[in-house]
Length: 339
Ligand code: SER
Image (cartoon, rainbow, N blue to C red; front, side, top):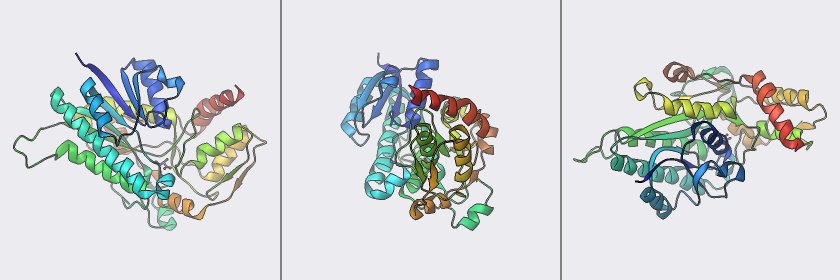
């Protein structure tokens, strides 16, 4: 008998840490994890198997398929928006070809198992592209179908992979006589910027939020790379994990779309600074805007409309801005750096 497992790519990343800990602690799931870098000891114990390798390595994925019944995939591996701009073609390979490999794997698994494989995909506010700051400031809560003209390679990759998910779910090999039905159950969440107490992101453009907080907690001066008035939606990591878990568990028939916005709070960089200074009064936080990175932030919405997620699968964040800092981020970060 082959073991039934959950496959998590990009396991050592920010969401990977939170998700693996949650699944391991509360669900006792059999987790097979992949990442290009070694998996942190703190989450290694929750995985039945860790494979250090690349999702572009077809042989590696082939070996996993031979060994396990993969029931659910959380495909978290990705090159984030800032890093992707330094090597767009390499980012495209990881973000698009990597996703294609996983979609194909999921489809093949579904054929073997005779039932759909669930494919959870974290998309992003980067899938949006607002044409100007004026439009951003007057757009209000942006809906899933609006302003889908991303300007970054990462955002374009995310938007396209959402479409690939739809294709593999509903139209794969639509002309084939032996066309398999319902082979893939693709579900995507467009995440806002995420802030975790445990990890600091690398290579993203919403990173100024978590960077500011983690720097202050360590007594390191921080020069914020966006203007004080820059505004993006954010969410605390426990809510991001909760969103993935709840969307995974939602009955298929309740889901009226494949891609959902979720969000919690939308502070400006100046407001973030005030909150951080409130907790660490001696912190040195200055502003040194980087024009190109600011341009990316200006093209992302200040807020998104997550009413479809609320209606279809009961989404509601546990942590609003006040609670996120007071009850999760600040206590956990203070404890972390006091160690
Ligand atoms: N946080 C990501 C980034 O900044 C967006 O999904 O690239």
